[in-house]
Length: 268
Ligand code: G3P
Ligand code: CA
Image (cartoon, rainbow, N blue to C red; front, side, top):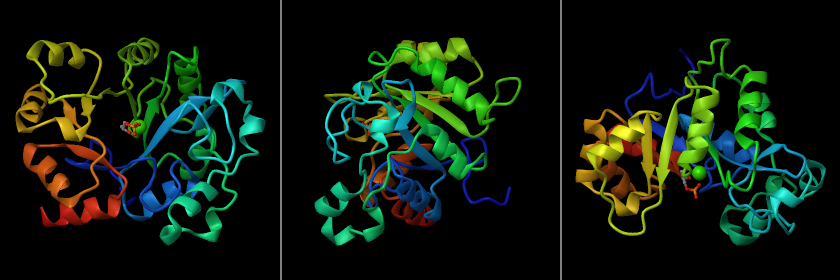
């Protein structure tokens, strides 16, 4: 197509704008996602939390405290209450050198608003966060995907990937729609290893794995790629690490700096 971003089906290595271009703009706001697109990120990464009244919103933490001027858990707040919060001023205060007036008063977007804004040509890499805290989250996600025609009548999609640390959540999504491509995330505390048996069992429901970059090595990537699974480490912000990931055979990565990763890719 003639749009700038490409999915895992069209491109060997994908550039995932982690929480949007969150190195430059307040994470999980429309401007951060827009910047990700401008910098030619292939996917907009979205973390999901669910409000008290069952609406999916783009936010990393279970609490609104870090990324808004409010306090408390998303699950205890209605969407109307969350919509009163300022999701941009914290960024201006924390990063004065990156501050912009336009970030003041930004709102927490719902998943629906993100779909409305960026449409079907954008690619979305969507994470079910804390699924144990939000019963019904997977059902709601699939409903929104259907409503915004991100899946066709047969349940297929070209522009959405679903990711989670929770295998249980991914299995729920898989049971609801076996056509949705899934990525199993891992957060390793020590140097990571993965076995053929583990990879075979992941392959039964997922198209890839996403571990923390800092705990993997070339051998790990080799194992993953031998099973023909995608390898998308997070969160890779340094040029040298991006190069290393590519040398190991990464098929994409999550970065707060999609512009930097594109520079590295152009030299690669
Ligand atoms: O989803 C990949 C990566 O974002 C996982 O870590 O904490 O940034 O959601 P986190
Ligand atoms: Ca994430």
